[in-house]
Length: 340
Ligand SMILES: [Fe+2]
Ligand SMILES: [Fe+2]
Image (cartoon, rainbow, N blue to C red):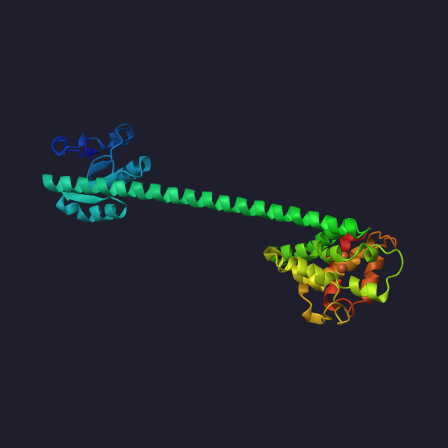
């Protein structure tokens, strides 16, 4: 059988004729003359095409079309019309009917209309399945991509945390400093409304800011007495050493700037490049403040922790020299919950 077709007309003779014609063309056809029974028949027979008379008692052609479509959206509707029904037929075509046939039925025309409707239905179903499949495929690929990115991020984070812990371990007495300044810097820049990308760069820069100290000899890094002038010169190279370590690593390129510039001062008296004001990146100017605050409010081998309020006063004294005067108050405000 080429397809299931349901013919509906309130005139039983037209129904019989239509069903016979459809059978002769090879379709599996059923017919009915009471339109109220159509929904039940659509559910049980599941026709691919319905041929509907649009002027019937009890139920309008428009309602019938809606009710068939609500049972199976893919059912194709061909309208049977008299010559004076053409306006109604056009309005039903707009609602999704596939075609219309004028009464009296011309057999060949009906065969062509049914074949065309079946082909239309096949294409719609195929297209819908293709779209669904495409959507599923896009969803699967997007999920796989975001999983891969998340794994990569997790891997990056774990590597950076380990490195930061190693830096702190070697730089005696700064235990947890790198993670803490990273957290503080994030807290500050979040309040300043920076985007996630900038935030991540600042976090990475903060975590690794002293990575260059890994190249400073133990005899200098751990010297219990004051450093000589030559030793300070070597110590002051740690930002450049750190920069050399990370600048070739793609995802740390932006963070490298904080590593290179974290000892610059706003008035140009810092090192290694003696950058001034805006020449120092925004993230680095924020980081310098955070780094200094953390150094004061946590214990170090050579000094006891000071209260946050005292640290704030010390920072304010250096506003405009060490630190960007426009950032001092916003940063202190953003960190005010460190006040115990
Ligand atoms: Fe440093
Ligand atoms: Fe530091």
